[in-house]
Length: 411
Image (tube, rainbow, N blue to C red; front, side, top):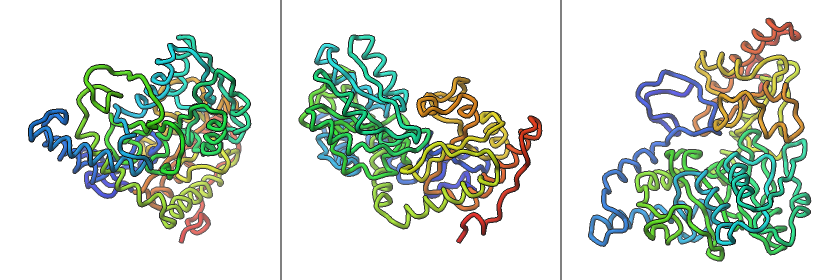
């Protein structure tokens, strides 16, 4: 189980938490030790990075070093990294910042499974006069590149497609889509908030890539936009000339240093076959346990992120199951954290053609570097018990029991 208060690997460094099993990494990740240490160093570097004196220059040097470390994760020159207040701001800067210099003219192509940060930005652009086309996914949860290409028009300015879906984990063919977009002479933005630090993004050729630190072991409230030197945007935040005039405001140095430290920790894992194998081992283990329950559906097919699993359990309300699991120290979610507490079905699952009933019966499990076989086994036992309990009340089918570890692919 995830231990507290000890600070270990990517475990939570809080002092007032009891033991629990955290399987909601898609919502946010525990702060890694290196990021926590870097945050502390950043707080002591009190100088303004824009100041000419020695205190300011010390802060400026630390900012430059952090920019280079984040650039390495993104696979771009440091000058193309713009620090923001998080992933949503990075997305908004990419989208609104592209259309603002055009006085809100032109056409945007995006998809129906995007995060609300993209969809709400698209809605805001539409209200200003931008024409928007929303491409539907396949039932598998994936976007067909041909559909995106067919949506591009003579007045298309920007295409925005996420790297992997935050609810289902479905990995989108963004490099293929980028090639089609560039062949048409248009701009491409990729929302990589869910995949940065989890999947390689350093080979992307998109004009803009958005990331957020708290999704890969960094602090909340800081993110970045990779912005191609060939593309000009209009800043959302005006004032000083920080971030080369692309995002005004004194930089959040502690947060930036924390994000950079988390990027350094995450980067080696991305190309480590043993780490990837372990992620798939945990996924297989959990799904084999949950297959003991009848009427259980996994909501996305390959290619998917190993560490994100969307599962529907017929005959129950997922929010009730999640509440029961929480009382047993298991943290999971019913979908995007941005929509927690809302009764409406997931817009992602709806776009995939999944019924409202099945959508409301869906749990999302997502894990990270600190997750163990024991965490998976305990979460599966708790889930099966909760679903059985609720199905007995509703009269839905026969009960199931958790499978032994050997049957679940244990080594």
